[in-house]
Image (cartoon, rainbow over all chains, first blue to last red; front, side, top):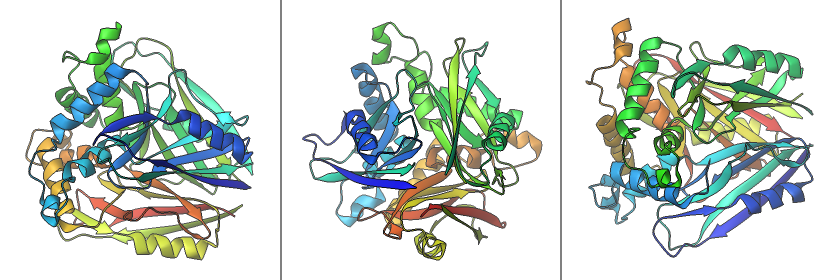
Amino acid sequence: MKSYREELWFETTSRRAYLNITPQVEAAVKKSGVREGLVLVNAMHITASVYINDDEPGLLHDYDEFLERIAPHEARYRHNDTGEDNGDAHVKRQIMGREIVVAVTGGKLDFGPWEQIFYGEFDGRRRKRVLIKVIGE
Amino acid sequence: MKSYREELWFETTSRRAYLNITPQVEAAVKKSGVREGLVLVNAMHITASVYINDDEPGLLHDYDEFLERIAPHEARYRHNDTGEDNGDAHVKRQIMGREIVVAVTGGKLDFGPWEQIFYGEFDGRRRKRVLIKVIGE
Amino acid sequence: MKSYREELWFETTSRRAYLNITPQVEAAVKKSGVREGLVLVNAMHITASVYINDDEPGLLHDYDEFLERIAPHEARYRHNDTGEDNGDAHVKRQIMGREIVVAVTGGKLDFGPWEQIFYGEFDGRRRKRVLIKVIGE
C-alpha cells in the first residue's frame, strides 16, 4: 500500500470565501503514484469546509446567502463569550461539511461531469490549512 | 490491496426521490472480494446525495418537507440566472451530503440495526450516476 | 494491509448530548498498529452523529440551540406516527453528519490544532454504538 500526504495553505482576504482547489488535489494524486485507492481532503481548522459542488459564481453566492440566512454572523452565539466572533463559522462549517473522500481510479480523481473540490472559508483573514491524504496502490 | 469499482444509474420520474440502494451496494461489496476494508458510495452529480438513514416512508416525507422548507424550489437563486431551475437542489444536496463511507468487515457492510443507504435525488427526470468504490483485502 | 475494528458504547442520561470521544479513537488507532492509513468513525444508529469540531461548552450550547431551532423536537413529524417521538433526531443527525474519516500519519490522528471528535446524541437514554475502523499499514 502506498500513502501520500500534503498540506495546502490559505489566507483569504475576506471573512468568507469559496476556492476551487481541484487542481491542487489532482496534482497531489499524481505525485502520490496511487492508481487505485481513495483520497481524503479535509479542513484542518474547525471554521472551514471542504466540499464538492459546481464552480459557478451564482451558486457560490447562493451558498453564502443560504448559510448567512440560517446562521447569521451577527446573531447571538454563546461561543463568542470566549472573546471569539466566529460562532456562526462553526455552524456554517457543519452544514457544508469538514471533508470529502474521492475514489482514485487509473491514477485520477474518479469524478462525474461537474464535480469540483472547494475550500469553504467562514472565518478567514488568517493562515489556515487543508490536508490531502492518498492511500492505495 | 484489492479495489473494485461500479456505477449505478438512475432516472427518477419525479424531481425529488429517495431510493434505497443498500442491496446494490451489498452486491458490489460481494463482487469485490474484499473482506476487510472500506466502501465509498457517492453521487457523481452535484444535485444528488448518498446518505444513510432509516427506510421509513414517514421519515422520507419529513426529510423532503424539511429540505423544501429551508431551501424551497420556488425561491430566488442566483444560480438559476444561468438558465437552470435547480438552485434549490444544489443546496439540498449539501445538507444531505455527497457520500458515505462504510466499513467492510468479514466481507459485509458493517452496519448498525437500522442503517440503510439511500440515493437522494433533488433534480431528477434525467439519467444520473452513483459511484461505488471498494478497497481492502 | 492491516485493519482493526472496535465498538464504543454509550448510554446518555439526557435526550441530547455531545461527548468528546477523541481519546478513545486515539487509543484504537494505537492498538491497530497502523502507521499510515485512514480511520473511519461512524454512528451505528440513525439518530446520532460523529463529527469534528471544538470542545468548548458555549459552542456545544450553540449547536444544540441551532439544531433545535431548525428541527424542533416538538414539531410535527410524519415519522412519529409510527409510535416514535424522534423524528427531529433523524433530521438533526443528517445536519451534523453520520461519520468522519481522519488520516493516520506516523501512527497518530493527523489533526489540526483544535480538531476533536464528538459523538452527538439526539435520541439518548438507551444503549447505542459507534464503530471505529482503521485500515492501512
